[in-house]
Length: 109
Length: 115
Figure 1 (cartoon, rainbow over the protein chains, first blue to last red):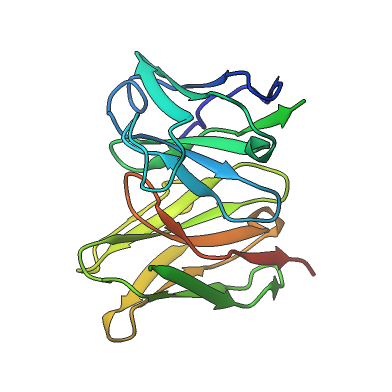
Figure 2: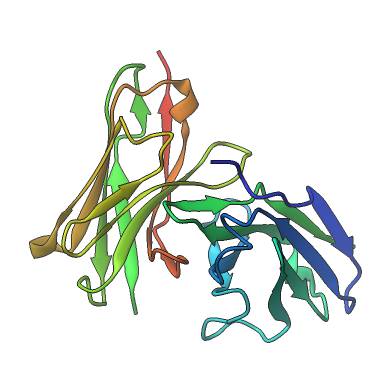
C-alpha cells in the first residue's frame, strides 16, 4: 500500500501556530475516522499525540489538535515551543492494514 | 503504567531469520491488539503486522509471505519472526500496543542485515 503524503518539513517561531497535512485516499484517510498522529524525537520511540482524527490521549497538551476534511487530515500545533521540534507522522487505518505518512520535520526557529 | 520491553538479535546475515520478542508489564494483555512497526534508518514508519489476545493475526501485504507474529499469554509476551531477510529489512523495529492507533511503544531494536 502507498504511504500517506506529508510535507517534508515545516517551520515556525515560538508562540506561532503551524499545521501539518496528511493526504491519503478514500480507502484510508477519507474512508475512516481512524487517523492518528505521532511525535518522534531523535533516537526515541514515537509518541501518540492524536487518535481517531481529533482525540488527545491523557497527558498530551491541548496545544495539539487534529482534524480531517475529505482525504486530508491535519495536525495543528498552537503556541509553538522549542520542545515541539521533532518529526511528526500520521497514520490511518485501511480495510486491511495500517499505513503511515512519510513524516514531517518540524523546526522551531 | 504499561511498559513494553523488547529484545532480540541486532545483526543478521542475508537470508537469515529476524526474531524479536516484546514483554508487556503493568497492564492487561488480554483485550488488546499488539503490533510490530519498523523504521529504516532516516526513513518513515512501516506497519509490519498485529496480533490480538486470541491469536488472530493480520500482516502488511508486502511482508505477509515472510512474517509470523505469535503470542505467549502465560508470559504476557508476543514475538516477531521475519524470514529470508535482506538489507532492505534493516530498520529499528518497535513493538506497540494497539490497532487503530498505537498508545504504548517499546524502546526499539536496531536490526542490521549485512554479510
